[in-house]
Length: 475
Ligand code: ADP
Ligand code: GLC
Image 1 (cartoon, rainbow, N blue to C red):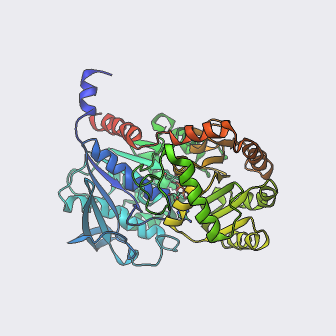
Image 2 (cartoon, rainbow, N blue to C red):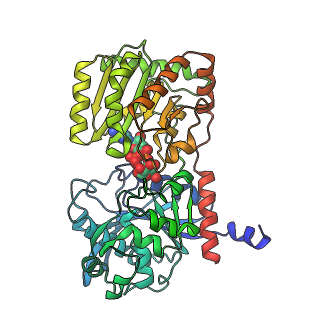
């Protein structure tokens, strides 16, 4: 590293961080956790960060200060939208208010592509309204993916935004944001010539592919996933596009907020614990969970805390459940999603006293389950990073995971957890059998100690993003 580059690394930058969800204000999954903690870690490194997210009607733990309207170049005209701001832990947040976001859920509507086109198109206007001219703009997932293209081709950009360096992070390549080319051009106010850009995927507009072509750098949330998406099995049709940008593609592993996830202070636990008192703390959590849900406290508990989606392989866990029970394990599942899976899980719980299921999203309960469980199972078909396994280790629960994506990068078989190769019942049960035979031995105690000692703080990853930003800002 030259002296000049070293100097640049330490120079404070202005970073605009765009995300469709941000913890603790809105959350459906790990993207919110990342948007909640990476900007704070960057702020601790001395950078000025503005996080921009939609102002959903169900926004929690923030009462944004309304600073007025902006005019968003959208759908051929200028669309009024509100802007509210909020400050917390050294980070400034701006929320974009519009009828599009006054709904019961964050996503899942027919007009999602239009909703997030408006949000994307609002970003430069919001920043400009706050007199925030960024050095770099960090985009996350398909919802904000078209911004990189807009910075290159869009009309009505505030001064300082055209050709701004951008980083696009892929948290999940399964969701890409599609519409017709004509619709996307109309919403985003782009010239017709966009038909001949990366936005065009077989005659349709694909937001994620647009960012692959136009963002200055592309990252994924683990090194293994950055290689996997370049293969047909993981690229969801974009593997060739990922291969063709491999020169600017890299993987940076997520961290977790180790203050928010800390068994020493977690208010949801009956007894707080640290590495010295792990036995006592976990026993208290286990006895509370078992008494509440009718499980036998003498049996080791394997838990799953998850969206019930194909990605997560929860159908494999359901198929393996009777065998896990025969192995002497109790199974506790907290999750929501696919109605068919929800039904199957409820049936299982009705049939076997060693299986308990809570359908829904419940943060305090998830904390009790991390603490009470001995194993946390993630039979994911693909897992860009995964945060649950890192949280589990922090609470002394050993991950039992399929070796894919970020799970492969964070879990070492018989080191800090158990891994298996195939997303199949046989492989899962084989690894569970190994876990059961290790349970209660010195080896288990050592593995638990190793897991508890893992450092998954954001600092290291934030440094990697800092290097990435400064490389493109100076370049
Ligand atoms: P993904 O974003 O793909 O769902 P991650 O592992 O990155 O997966 O993040 C999941 C996050 O959501 C974690 O913070 C996890 O604890 C939380 N979570 C998932 N399902 C539930 C649930 N049913 N109740 C509470 N928290 C949940
Ligand atoms: C996505 C991925 C998950 C990742 C999260 C945060 O939701 O499914 O693996 O941990 O984003 O990057």
